[in-house]
Amino acid sequence: MRSPNLVKMVSGNFVGVVLLVEIIVVMMSGCRFEANGLSMDYYFRSCPILDPIMKNTVFRALQADPTLAAGLVRMHFHDCFVEGCDGSVLIDSTNDNTAEKDSPANLSLRGYEVIDAAKEQLERMCPGVVSCADILAMAARDAVIWAGGPMYEIPKGRKDGRRSRIEDTINLPAPTLNASGLITIFGKHGFTVEELVALSGAHTLGVASCVNFKKRLNDVDQNMDADFAKTLSKTCSSGDNAQQPFDATRNSFDNLYFNTLQRKAGVLTSDQTLFADSRTSGVVNGFALNQAMFFLSFQRAMLKMGALDVKDAPNGEVRKNCHKIN
Ligand code: HEM
Ligand SMILES: *[C@@H]1O[C@H](CO)[C@@H](O)[C@H](O)[C@H]1NC(C)=O
Ligand SMILES: *[C@@H]1O[C@H](CO)[C@@H](O)[C@H](O)[C@H]1NC(C)=O
Image (cartoon, rainbow, N blue to C red):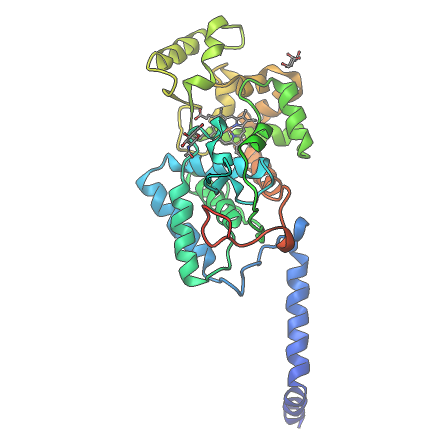
């Protein structure tokens, strides 16, 4: 007796039920909305295969060249700190515009081909849907996971910007900065001292070129371990482009970077200053002691960095080709 009634009610109000389900779905996703209009399930309907495509592309590329993990993480940072996370770092220069990527600060930005490979597949599966800025943010996340770092989900929905100018890269922090300078520039973007140290922990991956630290060798102070100074000198004897890993495990995302700073074997001035300055040294010691704490802080800070000055639809687009505006 009660089931036919229910059936009648349900079929009679089919539209109503669908509406109700829609409302519940919207409410549930609403709970997961993050700042700046980004959301975890942004492509849930428009490109459900996004996540497997990203992971597959990034993991494959890193299997062939593990050093690209560092390249992808750094590229996302450079994207977000210049004009917001809008894929502007990916744009090529044209006859009448010199783009961000041609700045000296771009030196050794690597992994463009991984972004291109992901974009190509995504354009086949869900044409015109996934922004280059989101692809870069996801690639950085997957690179961290692949290298053994924290596994975390990121909100999506960034639109691609239409501006990429070499002069804007002046906003990137210089490797010669001391803690005061770093705290100021990261503070301008809304980051706390702890977040500055956590994000600097990305230097657990990758290398720096001699040109970025050789001046430190002119007058080695008590901020650098004497044996490490010899190591750096040896590296630089091969020229400005010779590379020095930030820590002993350049392809592993771990907390060894912080232990390295404690040993006064940080590569850049901007690295070692974090241990030398009393405002940041406590955080360095904490992360050196407790990797889980570093991972948690890092993933939180990356979510924040990934939401910097994100563009919405009127101010951005979904680029068809990550190298140029539509
Ligand atoms: C705190 C201020 C920072 C400064 C001054 C700085 C500066 C630098 C410099 C000079 C290099 C070496 C580039 C070269 O010589 O080729 C480098 C590499 C790198 N940076 Fe930073 N960086 C900072 C923060 C960050 C942040 C926040 C991230 C990411 C979240 C990041 C990720 C990386 C990675 C992964 C590499 C290695 C790149 C590779 O091996 O290809 N850096 N950084
Ligand atoms: C980086 O910038 C230099 C000029 O400073 C340019 O010659 C080089 O091609 C750029 N590298 C990339 C990968 O775009
Ligand atoms: C940090 O660098 C700035 C600019 O180079 C300098 O004025 C300041 O004295 C430095 N601060 C410390 C604590 O060394």
